[in-house]
Length: 424
Image 1 (cartoon, rainbow, N blue to C red):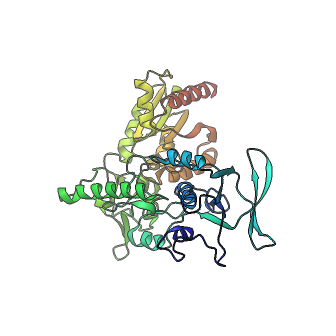
Image 2 (cartoon, one colour):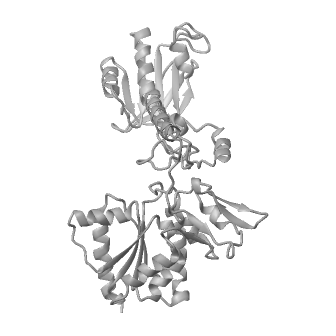
């Protein structure tokens, strides 16, 4: 951005390519991915840097046709409309591209910067002297994002950007109903993508405004006042902040309009004070009993998440992928709904293998964090199974399967049935 002001005719130097010391610059180096794609700083790509550097290098050539412009890069990512053509034009106009991240810059005898790098295509070590080195510094989340996140209860990802409800199905929806995301608040974006996401967010916001009502799922949890101890564990696992603790009444309260119906809170409650409508413990346990009513020792009892692994099982069926028939599937809305109580009930009814499946970690869960809590809960139960039921921990399985992985589902079933035959 600093250099763009120098190149601009309305900038402080009137478009003349001058350094801070007033010297006229003729040789330029662009250093890409400074602070991006780096495990020691930010692991993500900042998206805009490659094309901005190419654009500025072309502007240098317009101002000074005899000037030298070199771009040190890891990979050139020209992903937008017309971007590949711009990259080709830059090469044709004599801009030099050197593949290799510079390891440092030192000052030469005449005060010029010397870029130290390795050309990873040739293996050659380079010390390239220029008049001006321009750093393509990585884009980071706004410092105010944390305050906004705390105020509106919108979760942040590991890089400090706002997290969307689902990266593929709801890319501009926040996990909080009625709040939508646009531009680089969600991830590094250029102007074109920012405008596109803003248009999408505006369209999504218009729907409830025009309808004048909000439709919610009928699978929200209900609190039993007689059992609730107001411990707050349910509120701690809800990614939508739909549960609050009424300290005066000493009870958990569900904001139904904010709840998305994953059921993770139900599985987390140590007092069985929560039940999910249409997916109560009683209903699921009845399904388990029916599934294992005959020859339970020959069955693999499977809990499948509605959005990914259950859809993956469906795909395996419609694609006619072969897998053994002695698997019994219990559908839940999210793997986070699978409680210790349900797993132990399946073992009590004679299941030889209990298999919990869900969306891929870390970010594929339809309910944001449900699969994370499922992983934590099931792995803890695996360690305790020998003590609780004298059952080897290997008989409780946990795998992640997407809706598109029908063949993966079928392969897992074949493997599990093979293990089933070895269990005495």
